[in-house]
Image (cartoon, rainbow, N blue to C red; front, side):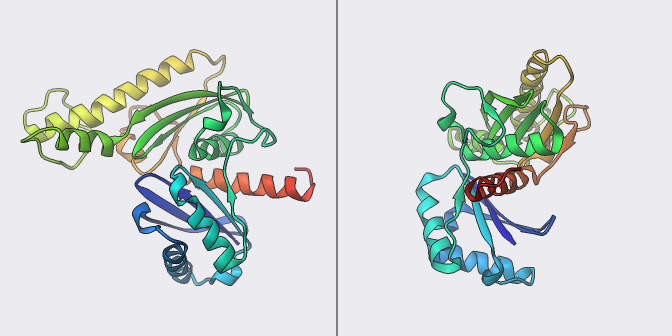
Length: 261
């Protein structure tokens, strides 16, 4: 049984992989994960919810974009489950060519998304991860070519709300009419609609680099907000990052043991 952890700037997702299935996942605020003991309390409660214990964990793999918390996960792994956790990074032996200027700069979440995209959707895929930030990852013929990073809905909303005196925070969703007739819809068009059409324009431009149509996969906590039946996403896979973390874990452990795929 493997514990998979996707540490984001706002939220952290824990996944529990048993045999050939993701048995459960749990989303918590990253701010709650200050020390190894706080992580222990959260993980124990998570496992208990699904009828498992810490003693059953055989491995642990973490994709983190918050470096300040990484040591807490290391201490947790060694102290409570006797495991030195793996941390996802862009290695040369993963079966992906990292065809970018500086591979060490690639975020762990993006490495996981690329691996998950390759394994589950093939060598030609575009992964759009919509969270606090939005990342577009381009996989062509098995190589990661780079992509783009945009502000996500929470960042846009926070910037608008904190930088103005009268604009309110509103529930976000796509507005079909491009002309907002009230302040709330004006904000929704500016955040959701503008982001959607911006993403679509970028992805349409990227698709021109392919000889065959790539698969467009959406993932992340806000993916469904942009799934508005416009034929933009081929699929929404909210578990793709966890699947990629699992793939990283299994590939690296095999390499460590000196066994081939």
